[in-house]
Length: 446
Image (cartoon, rainbow, N blue to C red):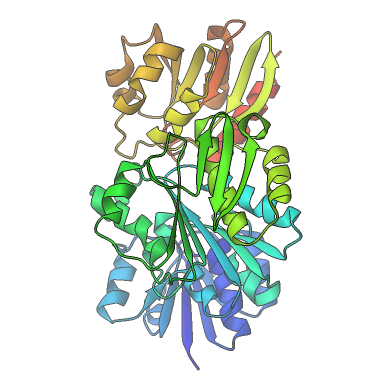
């Protein structure tokens, strides 16, 4: 009997454990932290051995294969020991892919992947497909394969998940963009991060499709040295010299796939802003490649509800609009948020800096931002860069203090934008926790 060890007892780990157990493996799950009650209940339901608060090496290093949580770096001491013993280490997505023949729409990128994933899923649901949502959103792919299988899966993939995927293959692979992010995980080498993102096209055949943003310079440079049999499906929002599968022309979003043409007025899209144009094109192309009718795609692009914590409208109070963009954990995400702003902004920045270069948003900040509230434990880097570039740069050590300061600084006709540029882990449990606290404090304002 093959021994499968799972490291990490969250959504992906618990799901992988259930799938391995259902397939008759000898399964053990270990988490150095605490396992959430709902996952303990799931593990116990399937009679899976588990431990928390420690890693018992003799129970782990006898594995035939290890399924690793994406959050555990390859440099972790236990992972290094496993590698030294030549124990294969894979991701939950890799493992789940072995046990399903479902179509896979896989989406990655530094920014926009959650919105694009949710939008694609929405279109396919509206079309009546038996579709599952997995990866960084939805439920564990492995758990769905084990207990609630679907004909199609739409999967959001981070670079961390792609790191340990080898034989898994997408049918439709989407790469939205690549900008510096998580460089601390990749030895502060951009080329390592880029290589991780491009793993999404590995194993593609001529029957598969690769959707990508044509104008991303990093993607363009990387494609010059890579070969893939997949059908290339670029999209662009600019005047296109080269043929593109999706593009903008005269205010219309146009699609051209296998000689079939259809279009939608960009003003009818439910998601606004240039970044969401790209997301809508990628989702529309993905759905078209699965033979969804054009009218269904157009209707779904028009009625989709925005993703929580991504340019999410909270409320308007005394003529001031409050926007929750807590999911903006890198500079490029904040660039897109500021690009979409049409009023003066009180901007909330800060958190755990991942090696950010703020020059990318400097012009927008100078042109659009009247005040910055730095929400973090250590705001020195923000002050060094932004002091003197906007009239006010101040600090807050809690969300309540932050929202109170924003309320005092914002005048009628302005927007308070939480778009932090940084990870949340210095003051909050997650970007979701940060966004929820922001919304709660804003909704309590009088």
